[in-house]
Amino acid sequence: MSPARHHLPPMSPLLQVIEADITTLAVDAIVNAANEALLGGGGVDGAIHRAAGPGLLAACRALPELRPGVRCPTGEARITPGFDLPARWVVHTVGPVWHGGDRGEADLLAACYRNSLRLAHAHGVRSIAFPAISCGVFGYPIEAAAAIAVREARAWLAGADTPTSLVLCCFGGAVAAACRRELAHA
Image (cartoon, rainbow, N blue to C red; front, side, top):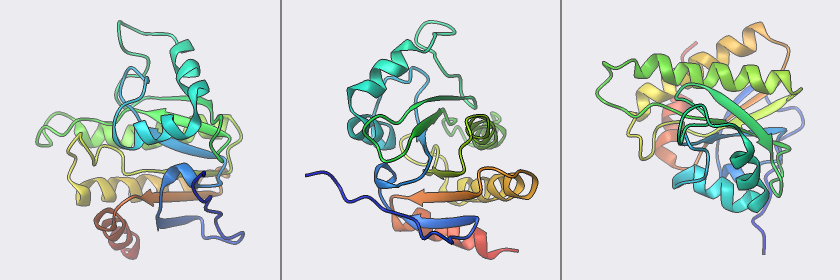
């Protein structure tokens, strides 16, 4: 039995926070918090690969390696079809591993959002959902990551005509609460 698909309300706000499984969202694109190899892994990356089916792994393997084991450097983004997902596209981005904040982590995380949105825009995406990039095994502090996610989403929506709907999809309540607190700041 396949998981229930979540449909966003037709008149949803431009930016919203939801607590859900990103693989079930009926949006144009979902963002995968991937590793540099783009061959699947744990957390959201593994869940997306499992839900999308073997076509996603094949599409990722077809992307050129820039150096051995690296198809997508940290902060950059790549796009593939969504295959068995309700989303048409998967935008893969590699967030930074948290090392205390003094190795450019904030700039790299912000670049993940900007580059994912630019790539989505180039493919005509009108609705996109982001997970909490780098907040799992990469150890990025949730409050700091939420601030960056909301800032970058607002900046994009203020200056672009697509995507028109941006979702911060949180798998856990702590991340959702942090994102909602950031959204509450005007």
